[in-house]
Length: 251
Image 1 (cartoon, rainbow, N blue to C red):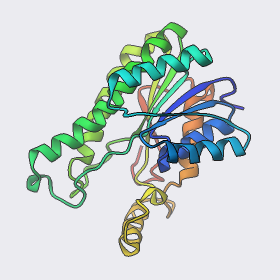
Image 2 (image 1 turned 90 degrees about the vertical axis):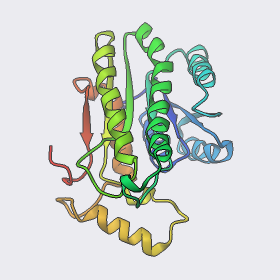
Image 3 (image 1 turned 90 degrees about the horizontal axis):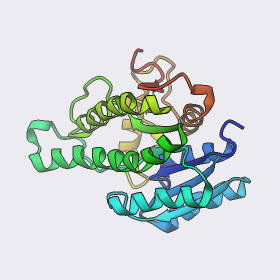
């Protein structure tokens, strides 16, 4: 198992992306600490993990509450001995379908600051523990990619996170901490369940069209890549993105 004995925190663990990563981490032997606002949905993912023979813990709180994030990270270390992987998969609302010049600045700013704040707070909470251990992995999800129209502040926010990820990799690397991004061109399975079927199909076609293999990444692909990135098999990788765009983004 790639992650035997490791402790991983997945922020947004009840979401499609976070849940996929959490299940893969647990499959590879990690104890997964699921974090989000709603205990019921977190418990569903934890139940799936436990039913498959894995280990999962649940903590429901607001990830934008710095003191709560810090206290939880400390509790993981106190109760389980280490904090080895921090994966920020918090989902953020954004003004989909609207040109940037038609947005209110407050909406653009919200897109950027919410995503950036979540990644900053969760990494800031994990870093002191990883520094003491001399090892750790911080994972982000998204990647900025080539500019695409009418995504509101989404790509602006992803670009901000990418710059922070590069800086963190540079600053934390000497302490043995790797910082990586999992980049996809979009995962059709992660589209909101309440989205009209016609809209879902149109977006899914748009995600597949630019790929080289004629398919988009799946949740299983994301989970497998996350487990690999978090493991010692990827110990030479930091300050970079794992390209899961199926060829939609070259290099």
